[in-house]
Image 1 (cartoon, rainbow, N blue to C red):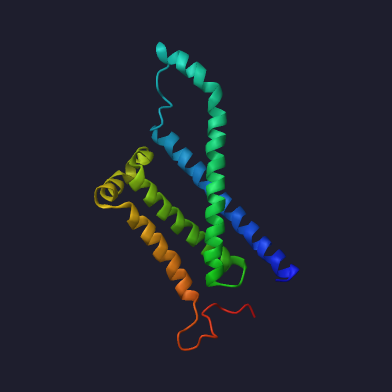
Image 2: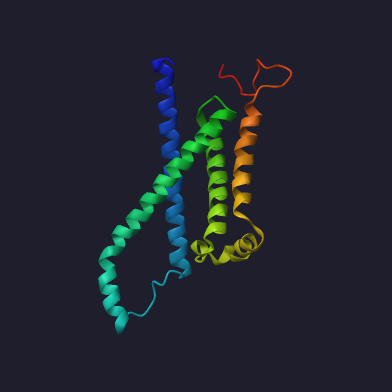
Length: 179
């Protein structure tokens, strides 16, 4: 591999990482705003009596907890962005808006597969999403953990199969050329 191709690969990877981290942060902000607006996080609890001491002890810790949660969203979003960037790269060798759009598409797909897997493994994680309760209840009652993983594998396998050479002509690939 030449130095130029390595630099190009690192540039593309850092762009996908930044795009994924931005999507993760956007998701954190949107979810936080929705939770606060819906009032499902207990912000309006009266703090009289024994709750006053608990609130006084916890209040200084909240900014650090919120920052750690935001950091996890950034990190997870960035890692999903890298994975989505690899899948987008398999579909198109060109950069630009098409590759960014494909990265976003794959990012959301990978996020949904991961959320599906987590909903089956730990349903209580999604208790603060009342709009999704019927769908999540159905998934928990009828789903198995392997199904989310198999669906994710099928998605990735389908992406790789799309880019594989034709059986009739092994020298050609369905990947568009960059020329």
